Amino acid sequence: VQLQASGGGLVQAGGSLRLSCTVSGFTLDYYAIGWFRQAPGKEREGVSCISSSGYNTYYADSVKGRFTISRDNAENTVYLQMNSLKPEDTAVYYCAARTGSWANTIATILSRVYAMNYWGKGTLVTVSS
Image (cartoon, rainbow, N blue to C red; front, side, top):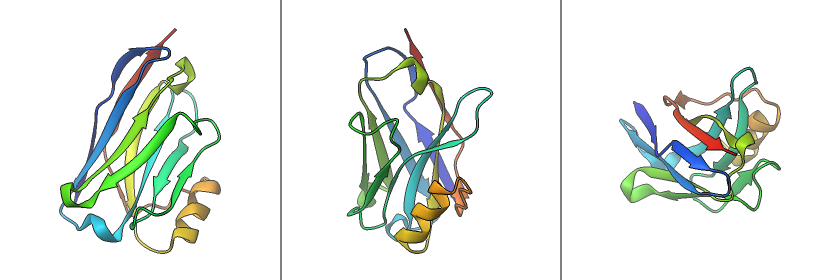
């Protein structure tokens, strides 16, 4: 089982990046996928999540209107389009997979427990001012 996040890099404030989370070793169809980030000296934050069907999405208030999550199950990939980036978006971004109900997935994110089944290694996003 593997989740691989990619697409991070250095961008100026106001710019855009698209992160990809490619999974292998399991069927993406049955998993919600979440994006999380952790900045130096700060706690991990749940940024966005998409249900296994793709019909339900969640965004943290800090990224609403700027980030868009999507998934392509045929390609075993989930994307996070990040626009209007701000210096405070600088962090290592991780993707993670979770089975179970959407309600429980949201609950684990909002409670900051982040009880996901599988985690990938992160990709660094740096936004310069």
